[in-house]
Length: 436
Image (tube, rainbow, N blue to C red; front, side):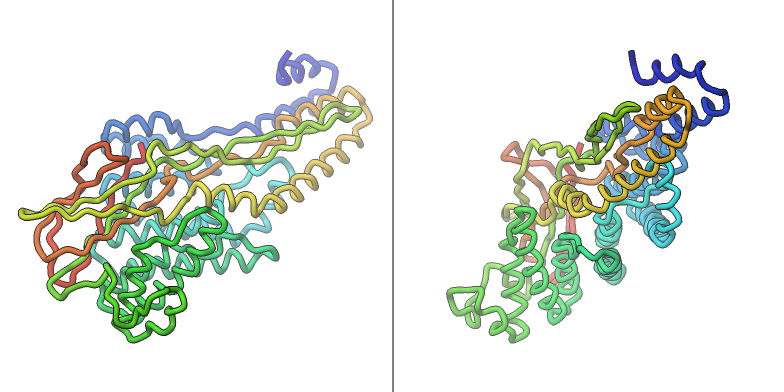
């Protein structure tokens, strides 16, 4: 017999008001959401019109407490479909809404203490809130708006600082290495090598933390960019300790001739991890008590390497991409970092409910309420499902001219990405996704 069937079979033995309250509590714990399989099927078939319309037409499926997820999904799908201005309109709304929810967190937490976290609006994981600005920045790069892109990566840094200031035990994800590296690339694209050097240098140190906690190594292209910027600004002595050879006079592979420009490929790979619930049942005299923890299920990417190819009328220039953001591992680690906060809140909530249940005199009623609580105590498995699982970066320095940019995934042949025209000293940012 299911727990729900037992609940209704026993209901005739208690008073109707208590039954009504119990059923309400059970239904309050139930959750719904968008049918992501349908959305993914549109993206797999490269039907962007259907995908964007599907989200808009099914906004009601998100429910009142998933409005942020609607904004995030709409922003991401429009981004992947090349609707960069529309995407940023959604992302900006998401940023404002997430901040409003965060500032009202005390009131919201008290509401969730009564039932479960599904009774309050989803305000996003810490890393999800920061990534809003990262993807907004990339959108602006696709629109050729460098200043606006820089504003977004600065906001990313500010958001992470604000979030971590709230915690006595800080998250590992307190700085974004890719965001800092991207900021350096944007500064250099804007001919500001001084600030580019500063951000490359900071990115180097953040990537060292990434390597320790996420297994993401320092990208070799970042080292090349750092050396070039140091040489151009006369600051090689500041980074000399990282190298065996004298870099003050050497020329790195990343040096740019006056008649050359750069193509930077940003590659979104695989799909974001999915939250699931892990439950522990503790026996009591009135029946089992449930403790529910959220965890991430990571969908392993089928391919973890790619190569970018820039083909002109006279030559092909090739470079491997490198991972710069392992969102899968960041998500898992970020959830681990707040595991203690989740556990303390959950235990306090379960204890308060048990005290209230034990105040009910009728034993059958206590048992029924305890069964109802098994439904109510649910782990919050809401998450930003349309995120990529990984982000790779490729960078080619090429003579000025026209290029067809292609990508090869795990050596499976070339796929066309975009045609670009490179002027001397210019940097073009190109986006590609292999998520669906």
